[in-house]
Image 1 (cartoon, rainbow, N blue to C red):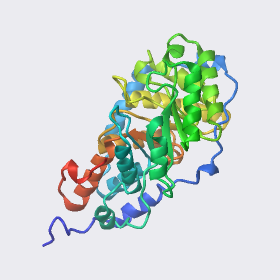
Image 2 (image 1 turned 60 degrees about the horizontal axis):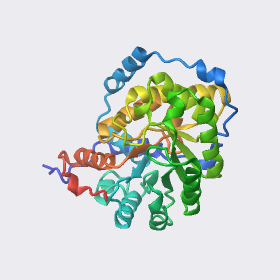
Image 3 (image 1 turned 30 degrees about the horizontal axis):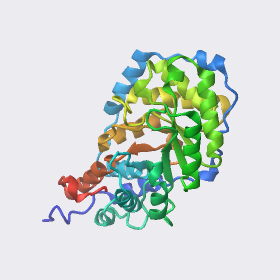
Image 4 (image 1 turned 90 degrees about the vertical axis):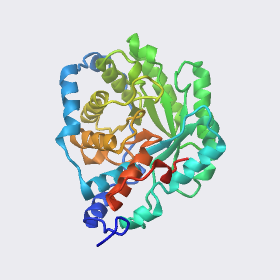
Length: 344
């Protein structure tokens, strides 16, 4: 009789084949979103049926039951989509270096070996830090191919002077950040000043240069789902490479109804312009089951192409720990303590 520790993985071929599909195409394969002139007619015509969106969101966790090897495969894919993040007031260079070490090897070696995945080079999509730690993270990740994302432009409120916000982006790029997560001025959305929002994001995009721009909408502080849709369209028109739900500091962060509205704006933008824009839910996604719900939503709303790191990310800090625990449960049949999967 086999013990829990030595029990063979059930149908490992399914895990491997499904995870192989998670390999992203080289970033250069998809052209960046160049943006377009602001189309106020399109923005003002945006409509959202809130009750329909909420009904749709309620069905996502119940429509699919992903179990055994398929669940393990989806969770391995989720790991490759994580922007591993630390944005705390007590961050230190040592914590950032430990986070980068986890980014290089996000799953314990014994678990990967049990899954037959020890040779695939499993890694997260990026490491996200404050500007002060960009250089530390770049040095710690040297040679790994993992980009550093910096939160800039007055994160999280976005209310510092505009020149200061631009200077912070320039400094992060100079220190080696390959992605910039900016935060918009929510007042522009709340007052319907779409031209000001467009000009702001466009200036951020130009300051980023060749570095990718993720526009954080702070959806928990926007008034309506219609505002979320309009802000998404304006950010994409201004050239954002990704639109992102939240800073993680709002009272309400990434929730499925908001995600549906944003990805449908992405779909509409793609249909009208031919340009692909990525999506990043951030804040509050802590459980492996929640990551599966978001992956299901992306697959159903935008298709498999949006299940790769160049078009989809999770902004998360504790999600990885729960995914590791679920993978260990799949292998051994037992849940392990969180301290067996240290993050930083």
